[in-house]
Image: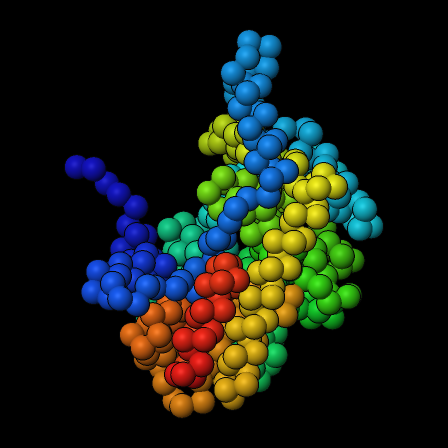
Length: 408
């Protein structure tokens, strides 16, 4: 008899975005006259920056030569990319991160899930509500969830995040071992300021907890003094892992490249009390289970740090932010509660009519041919909201706004 991981029985039958894709496929079959405009998913509409495309083309040509061929690369990532990240993303901003604390991966989503390999199954987890579903599902698969009751797992702490608390929830009343924080936030588009982040770092230091900081959208921050890295907070290097991605900055959703920072100051403990750095554990995990991101994708990522690449990334993120701001303005003008669209590519909107998330999703889809994401799919506190993104083209975003004006 083949025994399988029983924790999969505790997961929802279908992942949120997979379910939405099925609904949209059915819509397209039945509504050929009104082309679907997707404002629901965080996929870049492209194209990738020419600096990255040129670098990847050169990498392919290099690999096609006897002198330039490369086989297995270093599991932690090529030195040329880790050095660039350490300098450009951290040291030039006054943050001391060493290249040995940077691990190149094939995207933030993979590292978010794989980090569970180095952490005890007994760890108690806290997530914001609403939250990116993978944070919960990853821990369910690892066995940290407990029992599901009324849509929540009893071993996971849900931190209410809403308009009343400015989407910055109160600290847990109990002690948790792992805390997931995403800022700029997916799905709400909210951004934590220095004071709000500091309270979490102080909590983690006091209770010897671990913060997993999802910083995939930091390149969209434009407001001065808003932290783009959790390591801007004193003491964070003792308690926080930071995860970033080139998907939303360089259009790498189909290329796959990102990185995780694990400072050597973070210390964990085996059951017998023996200390070990999480940096060492993650390195051991990666050398066993990962053969490294491709040389081609890493060369493309490195090109994003060139003068031309930086300019192209800024232009791309400016365009996406402009789309998000225009979406925000539409719903604000119509009297909806709205967050995001400022320092964030996401817009989180609640209607004033009492429609549920699913009713709002269905109405905009059936009457406007515009897809959104029902907020209830992100947690109990998301009911009544929808999430929209600025990642589509300007032309499609403008068309979607024009269609929705008649309904919202």
